[in-house]
Amino acid sequence: MIRAAGAVLWRDGAVAVVHRPRYDDWSLPKGKVDPGETVPAAAVREVLEETGYTAVLGRHLKTVEYTAFGKPKTVDFFSARVAGGAFAPNDEVDELRWLPVGQAADLVTRDTDREVLAAFAAAPVDLATVLLVRHAKAGKRDNWPGEDDLRPLSSAGWRQAAGLRALLPLWSPSRVHSAPRVRCVQTVQGVAEDLGSGVLLEPRLSEEGYWPDREAALVRLLEIVDGPGVPVVCSQGGVIPDVVATLASLSGLPAGDVPCKKGSAWLLAFRRPEPGWSTSDTTGTWPRLVSAHYLPTPLGAPKP
Image (cartoon, rainbow, N blue to C red; front, top):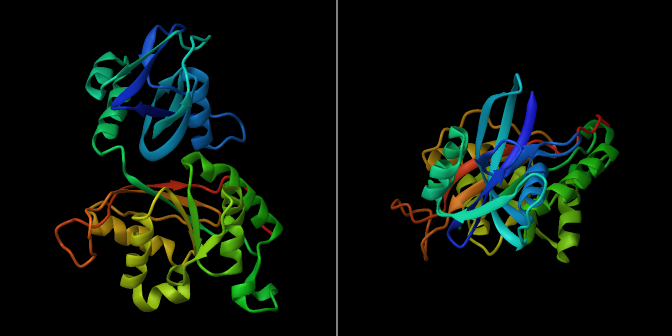
């Protein structure tokens, strides 16, 4: 299978559509995933190579499948806002147009690109985004002589943490929260260091803090969502599946299976709430989940 990634690149109410002379078609920027590259990183790289613009990723829009050169091809598309740069004609793209979504849908050659644009137009661009991370590998509990709260990452876990340190900045996070366990904090410590900030501890998002009062823990997570910028939140495998499934159910989305491997993350996008929202309000003014996309651990680290 051919794996590829792309984005609906947007700015000022318009999206980018590119002309590829090799195929003589109009397309959304996209391209193949390089060996060892994550799908989100490929999306950002392809946008830069084809358009000249650096991009900050938002929600996952859609995965499309079709046959190319006799092989099955899968393309993951993200929403992506312009962060800088400028277009110059290049070997892959000789023209770029900024168009309203409707006009872009009329111009693109492939129906699959029209489907992606429809998914993009189905929600506002200013959604609140959170990256909900499961801590990386920390070895077996039976092999750790101290308190479980203090169990650190294993060598494989540190490699996973390094992968997350490279992956999560693609969404330009602004703050880092974590359950107060050493392995959780260590998983996202590098991201916080790169931001020049500390890790904010969230006792309610640990396993022992979550289950005695799930409602209070979910309220705390929604408060984090409602804060400025894009937060990274690190928690545990006994918490994350229930959080994702519950938020999906409350927002009328299909939950299905909720994978949660160590070192993985969930990309969650919410409609921003109205001022003065409360979880006791049934009018829909609190943050509502729009999409949930699973991001596998960025490294296939061996078991410790």
